[in-house]
Image (cartoon, rainbow, N blue to C red; front, side, top):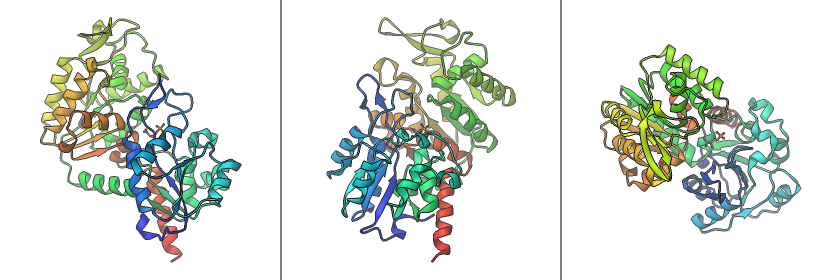
Length: 401
Ligand code: 3PG
């Protein structure tokens, strides 16, 4: 694939797709953790002298973290120490006018790309190029730079559409992630232990099977919402938990346990909140309406044994509500275990990246990626839509040279 150094960007109008999808506090709608915004600055520095139009999404339509990009612009401005013009528009007349009026060195941040309905659907590259978003904006751009590694598993118009019609290359983050991950995966030794949490259960279930089948998961230690789904599938929790598409995901988990009976581990004890306090219990004692906030000590001890005997550990998604001091135990203990193990270690996702920094463990991890679901899929070996789009763009570009 091509990189920014393959192009002379001075004076060019560049569309830069980044992933500034950050954790948001739903009560204040403030950005809690900014590492994904920080990650986008390397490409911006490399694009010095160009007119850069940044596009990103934030949250999913209907979810609590779905919001505009105004605050992201302010954070980016502080990190870079440069003016970022935030446009409250994506593909309309205002956005088009602002892009046409840009001068060399200007940076614009468009509003949440998912405000445009098309950006919420998956397309083939050909169809993505025919969307209104790509049709309207691509004629204003000279080059497309794809740097949203955390969303490289989405075939949305901004990810595969522009790259289908414009000279396109990888940004600095994508370049670094791909190089580092490929390096690690060629030397990675077994047993492969995957510590899997997070809330995007449907995505996770799809990836787990691929990971197992591709020899990237000999042991899967479950935490967070996905653990609860498996606990229901095993009948250890007997009532619905109020998770999206619950019956469908529980039956998928059930099928996975049947197919791979020795791979999955679930928590045996957990922690909940009662009157503002942490209360630990056997998982079978959980009552209807009570929410699991963390792993209990027996589960942690058991998981740590697996981690200690691993050749490679991949941890994605926090093990509990670690932002609250009462419930950081599981996440902090597992991260310490991963950091101090002799295994090759990869930790992924915005929440864990923040946790590693908070506990001073970041230096001890072989690779930290702000990507979550995309990274899980990358490790399965499947070709991600963004990488595919970049490879096709590179082949097209070279054939014209
Ligand atoms: C992520 O956080 O994993 C990426 O930003 C992709 O978000 P999505 O799962 O809502 O597409």
